[in-house]
Image (cartoon, rainbow, N blue to C red; front, side, top):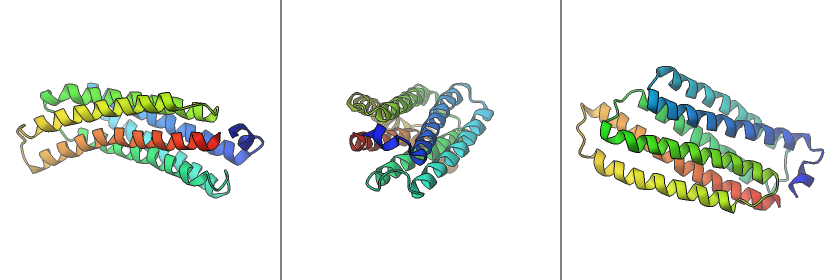
Length: 208
């Protein structure tokens, strides 16, 4: 059905190209964030912010194309939801990068945070693959399961971190707040990717 929907439909093709670009930028941002946690270089924070701005432009292009009449009406709500979830994940990753620049991560939390960043990157890569499979009219059950498994691993790491963090010394209120904000953004990102994967699965069924 998807091929019939796209045949000769320039607006739909433009929207999907921008959606692919949006996802690709998010994957680049997760790779940069992974480097940031390992290298702690300030220019990487700015790079993530630049990627978020580029992603926001891609999001606006997708939505404006949809509002101009791309796709059948019954598809538009789920398309918009998927795009907005990807954008919210982008904003959350940017927040994590900015707050990370304001803290000195305790050594006892470093390994878990690095693992979560790596899992987030893997989830984003799977989501990008799932998007391409959707365009081919394929089945996303394998990718959906993989995303859920990785998100569960992030949840387990989050539980370990929050059990430990309560006993860590902090220099003051703002140090504690920035640390809490960083950890919240880092772990919320995976929740948003799981939601985006669910929205994409619904789209894949609608496209068949």
